[in-house]
Length: 149
Image 1 (cartoon, rainbow, N blue to C red):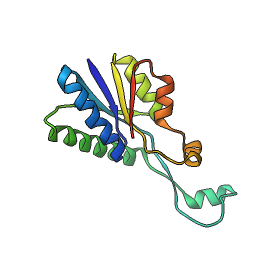
Image 2 (tube, rainbow, N blue to C red):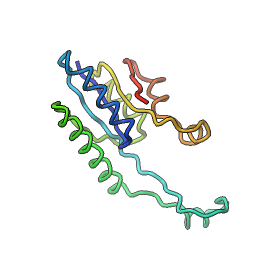
Image 3 (tube, helix red, strand yellow):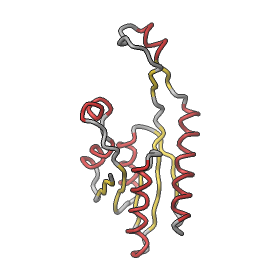
Image 4 (cartoon, helix red, strand yellow):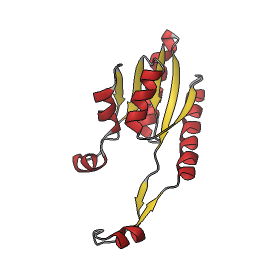
């Protein structure tokens, strides 16, 4: 058996990793931890809404691929350390693209038996704007998905 855990650096995703390890250890399952590199866009602030391309150019910062990769490697390293503290070895993999899509594709291509991921519990408004990786994976995955709050 192979369990897949998607991490994003949040406490909830690390809780999902801990849960996966709890389930994997007694049955001898392996655990693969993934993080999807998908550069973020950051708003630098300001009180007025962005209405023109010039406003967007001044106030939006797109994270570079290199920075996103470095952040992803740090997240995976932290997850591996959490697993190691529990006496469990995990494989880690950096994926590229939209997180929900990459998680589902990885699970399909690698014969994963179950997916574990955290859910941050964003407000309905924020979740509507940003979407929910957990909801998307639940709707697309062909294997059991455990969402850890």
